Image (cartoon, rainbow, N blue to C red; front, side, top):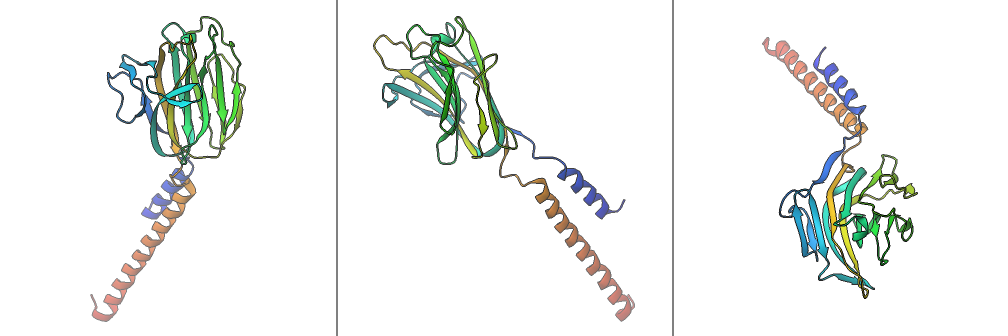
Amino acid sequence: MNKITKIISALLLFSSFNASAVTIIYDEFNSSTLDSQWSNNGLTNYSTGAGLLSVYGVSDPVQDGNWGYATLSQSFDALGAFNFTTNIGGSSGISDMQSVSFNLIDAGGSSVASVGFTDAWIGSTGSLFSSIGGSLVSTGADSLPAGFDHLTLGITRDADNNISFSSGALSLMQTGVLDTEITGLEINFGYFNYPGSTFGTEHVYHAFLEGEPSSVPEPSSFFLMGLGMIGLFVARRKKTVSSRMKCNVIRGC
């Protein structure tokens, strides 16, 4: 097999594959300090280590009506298809939490897909919610089973921009299409400022995100670039042969 045939074969093989997913965020919160990739906005009363991030309160929140918030966020290159998973809980079960959401952010800084838990009702077990482009779906107040301990939550988008949510054995009943590039992840801890309300302790056990960078050229683009390289190789080879022939005719070399 000559060199050109080998190049063509390699290009054909490569072009049959899509861009592979890469790990964007993989944090199990095993360190006693937050990973430096996280940007911290107002989160002061927390600890991390031994496989969990524990948040004890929002001491200086950004206010939105009766809600106060503190956030951790990371930015990254734009993603197409992606898969995000996390696991959350409270020191005395899931109802010990107030509100935590995981928001996927676009290049303009807006949340375009979210999944999370909220429990602003005293004595309630709380509810799950998900959002696509501002379209919110909730399981409703006091909808989680009593004594529920942990929640595994996820957001997935495939290569056709179909987006779906997962929450273990509980259904969020929402799917849709989202064609916006994702450039960031935000973990939002909320506290409802109401007489008699307590924050509890919110645990995040891990945050995993993998995806396909949307800036990676399509396989067909690689193939076309490869054909261009082959063309240059052939042209150079013809030039070399032509020069040798000319040398032989004129100088007998």
